[in-house]
Image 1 (tube, rainbow, N blue to C red):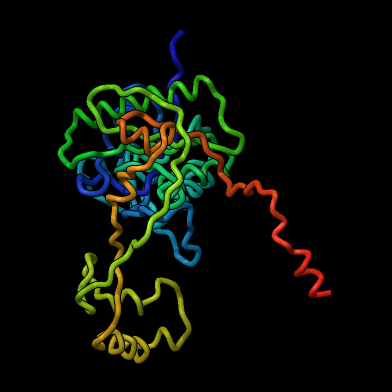
Image 2 (cartoon, rainbow, N blue to C red):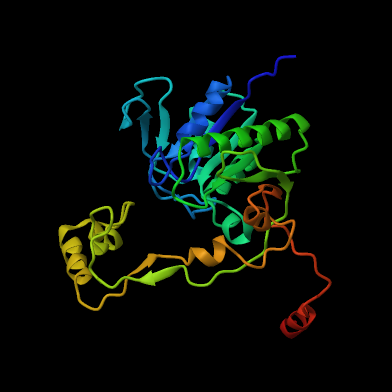
Length: 323
């Protein structure tokens, strides 16, 4: 019997196709389309990693379109295959896609990813925008999974990406065929970037911690990557402020304050080595699987589950003191 092609919605946290920040999204979509899958795409318009399942509720969300052939973006769709881009978080993309842009579509799956890099262990899963996209889909009553391609070197090419796409499809098709989704849950899939197929393991999350994620900037008034000064970013709100905040005098005063010497500015600069390559990951965890370069599939629940405990924490004392 011929398999029915799946219809999927895809979002990510790396943004539109880019060799530097989002190299996997276009090859993965093209691979699915080559298999006859029906693919709808709604992505953040820029990098949104480490943002989890958040919404910027005071921001207005702009809609643009990514044209595959020219790699250009525009405010109007040029071709039915154009990707929808939103100036919001991955969860925002999924919610708007399901409830507005593709509201008349019935999807077999919502896929977050493939992420540029692994999403293993609790520190990544709590922070990942890729997983956040899948979590939002579950909250919207959709079957969903998060997909990440773990890299071990920046020296990779089309063959490694294609190999990982093939492994991803094998796992996704198997999960869809068995159709035993966790109640109110999803799957977190991590695939080592590899030409050869790797063994697949059902895993648990490796529980770990981290320390410093930010560093102070040496240059207190340094231009940022976007070309705006730190003071401009800090003092120019993205939402409508009070009349005083919107006045030229207020902006000039805040700009002058921003150029004062001695300002302290931090930037995101985590120590990736300790969290990407843990040395104490127990066998059967997702981090252990990645260390062995195995495919990791972790069933998870879209919820902060209550911790099981027999401790009563002595709250009767607090209650008695207030009576």
